[in-house]
Image 1 (tube, rainbow, N blue to C red):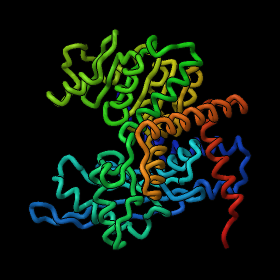
Image 2 (tube, helix red, strand yellow; image 1 turned 180 degrees about the vertical axis):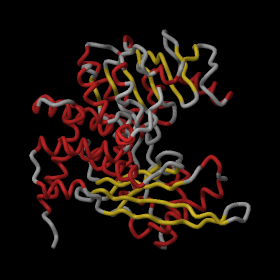
Image 3 (spheres, helix red, strand yellow; image 1 turned 135 degrees about the horizontal axis):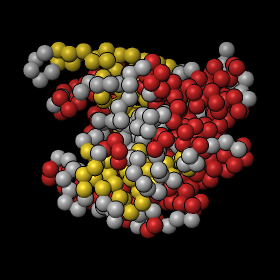
Image 4 (cartoon, rainbow, N blue to C red; image 1 turned 30 degrees about the vertical axis):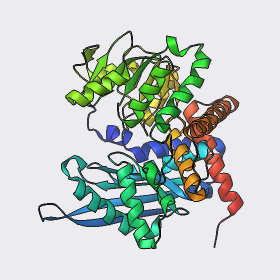
Amino acid sequence: MLLETTPSVEREVNPWESAAHRFDEAAELLKLDDGLRKVLRTPAMELTVNIPVMLDDGRIEVFTGYRVQHSIARGPAKGGVRFAPDVSLDEVRALAAWMTWKCAVVNIPFGGGKGGVICEPHLLSESELERITRRYTAEIREFIGPERDVPAPDVNTNEQTMAWIMDTYSMHMRHTVTAVVTGKPLELGGSRGRPEATGRGCMLVTMQALKRFGLTPESTRVIIQGFGNVGGMAARLMKQEGFQITCIVEYDGAIYNRYGLDPEAVMRHRRETGSITGFAEAEDVDKDEAILMDCDVLIPAAHENVITSRNAPYIKAKILCEGANGPTTFAADSILSDKKVFVIPDILANAGGVTVSYFEWVQDRQGYFWPEREVNQRLEEIMVASFDDVIGYAGKHHVKNRTAAYMLALDRVANAIRRRGLYA
């Protein structure tokens, strides 16, 4: 089910276009004045850096990196850093805006930021990745910090990447600054429960959605697209709660078992073979058709633009829980609404990660660390309360869940700007 490269399709899958469309819809319903819309729509800062790096073979290559701070009205900018060949300024802008709305939806005191470096990490050695990371950090160091902008892991970056950023920043500051990043190793100020947080958040809001359909975990069939940190953790945690994980979809194929899969066994199979396909306790199915199979819950947990106007009419799930950022295009929204699919939008569904990142930032600044049960308990309280806020807002204003989430987020950020006023 490949997309044609027409101008309309290109616009549909442009993440900045999707973010702008949803912003405009929410702003219109909130009756925000034009001036405030301009402030909320416009990123506070966009930085492009060119990073010269000596590769292992002695060649010098120049990589392009970005850091966008969309809003700092409610607190420091917060958002990941991704390494990928298709990183673009439009993508980073959209992701930074999504972070602003995500932090506002779960009501934590951050604004939105995002960063990225254009590179193919799978073709680079660890030492090359370290040099890219450290030079990128050095170039943006004046714009980040515990009270300015706090990076975190994202696509193709991890806790080791965060350790390099923290160390580089600390060397320039001449003292150790653990709170400059989140998603760090435990021994460098990371938080317990952080690796599972985004997947756990997906599980928690899905549990809340089940109550609206009279479903129990044991009677709920789940398809998970993406079996990385988010999808893999969601699958494992949901299996523990009794959900039937009937299908897992990855970039190189998909596997299906109507009676349910064991995510731990699938993970072991992938470690041994390099792929989820060929798993003895499942049948291989087409990865594009897999997300269209009959199920109760569909969790797209990999990347943007998975559900578009081309395949949305064939989605059979009752509940769509968006584990990834921007997995559904704006053109698909109305189709899913007409089909009565209960959407848990990304800025709510995958906010477990930034919520526990907030906990990590708090713990670093306190110099006092919480046991994992306390992290998980506080995460559940915030995710459940935020789910209720969004669904209550949707009912009050008679709008779909995604629109309600954006309206709630815009309202909170706009109110912060009104209360602060404009410095002149």
